[in-house]
Length: 215
Image (cartoon, rainbow, N blue to C red; front, top):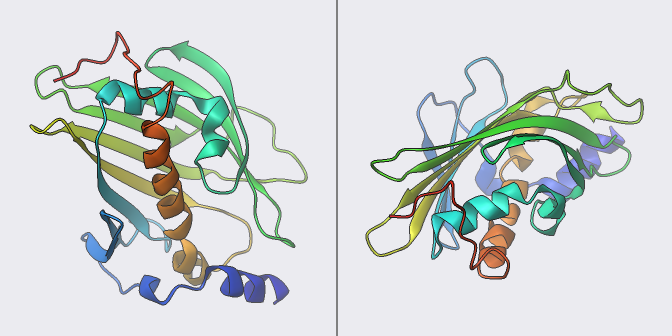
C-alpha cells in the first residue's frame, strides 16, 4: 500500500486516464510534441507514440542515440548505461539501470538495437528489443523483460526531421497495470525534452556519420 501511495503522489497526472482503444488516440499536445496511446495487444499496459520535430541532421540524431554512455544526460531517471557488445555501426547490445522510487526495487534491462535506412526516402529507423537473457539477473534488481522501442526519423523538405518514437514496455514487479498506465508517458516526455536540447550541442550538432545518408 505504501508503494501505491508513493507512486500516486509522484506520478498522478489526470490527462493520462486512458480509455480502451486498438487505434492510436491523441492524449496530449504540448511543447510541440503529440502524445498518443493504444491498448497493448497482449498486455494491459498501454503502448505509446510520441511525434515531434527537431531542427537537426539525421547524423546528429543517430549520433546521440548511439552515445549510450551519456544516456543519463537525457533519459529520465537513468542511473547506469553501458554498451555490452558493439557489433557494428548499426547494431549493438547495451545495459541500463532505471531508478525507481523507494521502496520499489530499481529496474534493469538489456537492449538489442539495430539501425536501418531507406536509401530512397532517407528515412532512418532505430529498432530496439529487450534481450533479458543476455546477462544474469541481479538480486537487488527487477529485470524488464518486455521492451520494444522504435525511433522513425523522417527528413522534411525544410531541413527539419520529424521523429515518431514508439514505446512498448512492462516495468515488471508487482505493480498494477492501471498505476503503470497513469505514469507511463511522463518519463519519456521528459526524456524527449532533454534529447532535443542535446541535439543542439556538440559533439552531436556537427556529427557526420558515414553510414547515414542525408537528404
